[in-house]
Length: 207
Image 1 (cartoon, helix red, strand yellow):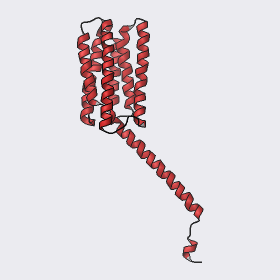
Image 2 (cartoon, rainbow, N blue to C red; image 1 turned 180 degrees about the vertical axis):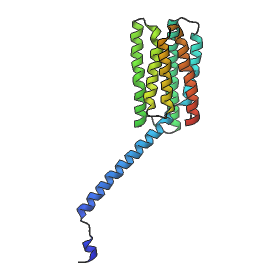
Image 3 (tube, rainbow, N blue to C red; image 1 turned 120 degrees about the vertical axis):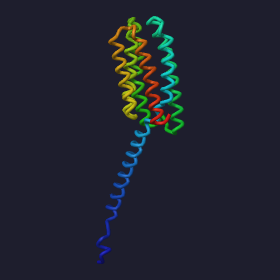
Image 4 (tube, helix red, strand yellow; image 1 turned 90 degrees about the vertical axis):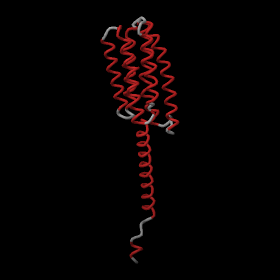
């Protein structure tokens, strides 16, 4: 019997090795795909949209300045609807521009992480309104928006959760200070923070 015959590998062992290699290749491809999705998730954060939202919030703060606390709350509720529309459109445009679908797994995770605290904020707003505690609106809105940004920022670049923690700080101040200061904290948070961080995100991470 020759050396070649002695070195022949059994067919079942060959098949086993091929199956194992296929599994490893599939696992590696899945890991690469997940890594690319996580790395690209930050590009869906619309910096320019954040700047636009910030300017509308600054305008809302200026309009609400000389009104009562109850009127200020209604002005900010309208501003919230405008900001939501701007944010959704900016997110959609940037997603299309970079060809990164919002249906991807990392994008869905980030959006779910963002939407959940926002939904909780809407429920708490209704409860506070029924309890006639509108003076707490500013603190609750800033805090829960900060939570939303921090949790969604776990799938994004570092600057996003940093922005969220700034909102948490302003929300804490809004709850610890008299209701007369609510408009100041809302303007500083939803206005100034959005403009500053939106500009940084647009400059450092493209649009």
